[in-house]
Image (cartoon, rainbow, N blue to C red; front, side):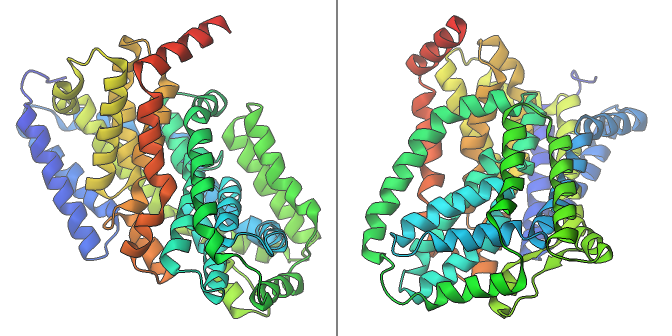
Length: 460
């Protein structure tokens, strides 16, 4: 619009002011939404002085928010689904069978594998850590496994959720902003996921040999008995999450898939678990808390429902609106132009994408910004160099998304420290998967690997 009157310094000024506000929000434990709102107001006022009209700027914000309209609905549906999957016994069943088959196994290895599998079905890393992760942490303490080591393995497994779960809000934000589908992006992601997962499994298996569970299993059985006492448990309950995974893999859109998962959970809650309809809908909107014989387990089987997702929607909306102003006013283009304008190598573009996404996640303390801005502003460059947008989605997911728990001041790390009671710095060195993904994505993003992948794609 007014590209000729905005300057690179204006973009840096808005970014710095927004970062300061975000830092203040973190320090005083305010919602990050207020940081983004302050950035929006500041940029609004600055751009008015640069010749933009109020109508121009309001239109920019509304258009940006409209582009991700379905994402807000999805986030709310995810909040509802997690609560209903708890009330329906789906998540308790996964915990029950997970514990049953890990007896006598390498505990660290088992914790990583089980957490990673459960994360795919739960769709949220923090949600997985606060449920299965806390349960595993409590049991691991009884077996003498060092807290930092075990929590590192749990965090590694849980962040598979944010990266590849079909019901992950962050993954769907990535797909939405890069304009890719789950099915095609998952194909690209396997190139980094498979080697990273295998390497991580081997590392945890080696470290975990010292902590095999061969002794007293009272802690494990106490959880199982409490689950059986509080829920109807059957392998049939696992058909619901398996159905969700199958629907997404065959290409069914995420909103209908999650809606079916929610409906299925409501039916199971009322029929098999015997919950009154009013209680089911109350759990869906206001959250669910377990009511078993174990108070410890009850604190694990907890979800905030739709209500808890309103703040997430506001934060994502704030990030989208601010990035929309920066984008459509020409400010972001000025900021990123120097970094990528002269880039002619595909491998360098992938490297710079990872760096930009990681820096944004680190400086803004929010993964959404590390997804939204590079997704929006690097798509044209990827097309120019003949790279598919799914490579962009994979690179962002392998870097800005998974490094969040490694940054001590990031919201993810702060929440993990709060819900686990474990020092952030004690688990960070052992969150192996979060280190391996950025490394492996750069290797896979080498020119040779890219050319080979493109040639195979053309042949097929």
